[in-house]
Image (tube, rainbow, N blue to C red; front, top):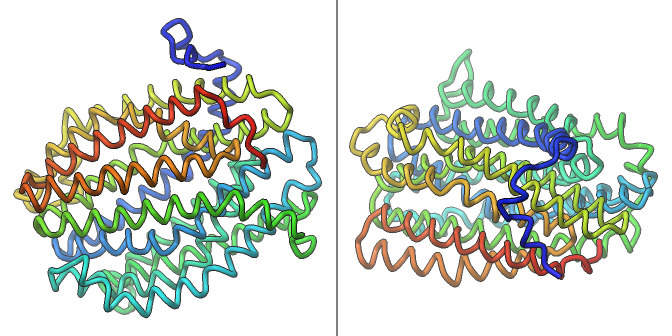
Length: 453
């Protein structure tokens, strides 16, 4: 049985009561994610005042950091899938036990990752950033960001729990505290305001790491207030919880690691085209990541709704939630893409001060805006599949398409054929469109109904 009619013109409207449920769960998640990526844009604007080399170095360093953190970030998907399933089963007294497992695993994995990456960065970073000024910025930036890897893993575990149990407002509250702290710390440490040391780009990395730990402390405080009845910190995680957590989280962690490694390699490919192209790509990607946040936030809402429906034993309702969230997200992303298409220079001028670099970024940003709505398909359904417990399927699709299709194409059209940033961007849009269509097919076939969480 398939569910493709969920996309038919006859069913484009989402019933009002279900739309309220989607938005009630999704809007706080979106608000938190928007605050996170708006903060990235603020950081980009601050660092952009230091020049193209600083902008390129921090952009590439951010993706190296993302690569290092990606495995522990994958724990959030496992916590959310398990917590949502427990809520659907009516086992509210056990809803926080997956969180305990996620926190324990985050601490176990983070320390060795932080130490290894910090030690290897001086030797490996120049391989992906041949330009010396870019490497001089990126290396210390990555090293100070490693101070926050454990906090990132724990924060994603908390995010998964709050979203899974339907309390995303607590996630939003924590992010607002964390990112307000980050803005203040970055300003003080980048520019040396109020007697603080003027650390430049390295100050941006240190401010972010410190703010991440402030977020962890806030999450723990809220957990003690609101999750004790669900078993938060009630004891050492049992073997079944850890086993299930690893089964769900390892594929998600591998998927995020492969994506982050691929994006780092992509920045290295673009860096071989030119520093201006690398700076332009950093800005366009950050703008794109902010614009796609509603689809990501609504996708996390879909993960919770799908997991809860499966916990109730209602796979038809789970499938329906997936399509209804897709339709909601597509409309939002279409509207957000319009400014990129109609006024790209206005968007870019907030982050790029060199007219030649703006010219390089203009058409890639327009193309990003034009195809933004199609990303809603893949982004929402990918998260819905994670909520169903089908993390291995998501891993297989994303890794094969990213590494087997997009990265070879980017290398071919970029450094080899010399088509510049535009050619690489066209390859990226084609790859993301194909990925969206694959996830539509996977969701329609409904094999994910039998996944365990």
